[in-house]
Image (cartoon, rainbow, N blue to C red; front, side, top):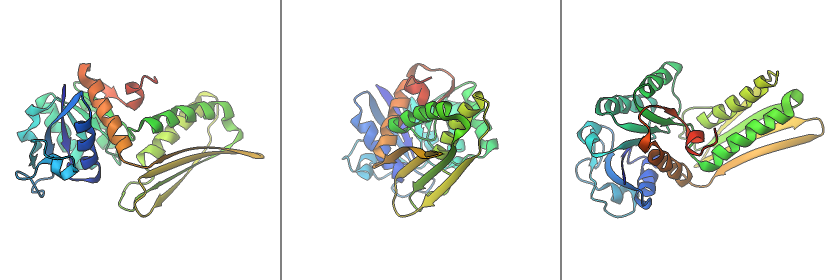
Length: 253
């Protein structure tokens, strides 16, 4: 049984992650943290916050206080908070799953440094469907090459800060890598929409003369991301160090 701590427990993803962990028979929630001074710390059960009933895990506002109670931390928070949690995990020799996006190049270097001596699963999107789309995009770009124009459109809820999304940027990287391997250097166009409560939608259009191919993924629920993150946490169990992503977890590399 893998012991998991969820940080950002009262956030949109935090609540869904708690639900996903509690539903997985190979995992158990042993800790849940909120930001310092966060509401409910020390008095509210994490399961009650997520709507799954009491789990016997009280919210805390200091991950350091409970880090020894887990094997893996799952973090879908903010870049700065994630880096703080990374330091705590490094000191306690714990593994971490990171779904946070919006890191600067300098911040990404800190994740890479962590991976040299600890195991980390880091991905812009832990949805199994999105990762299948990643694979299809590479194939499509390889076949179509420089004969098409490529447009990536993503849509998310109005509270999402980074744009384009981490998933859209990863799609672009996959396409660009495939094109480069085949001697092309096409420019990609990115479009971002922030509106309402859209969970997450990504469409890539390959537009040629007289025809268009579209590859689309629409997330109807955040549970897709949470289920994948828990799967990644279980997969890390026998990994001592290294930077991994969901493609590694799914065996697509």
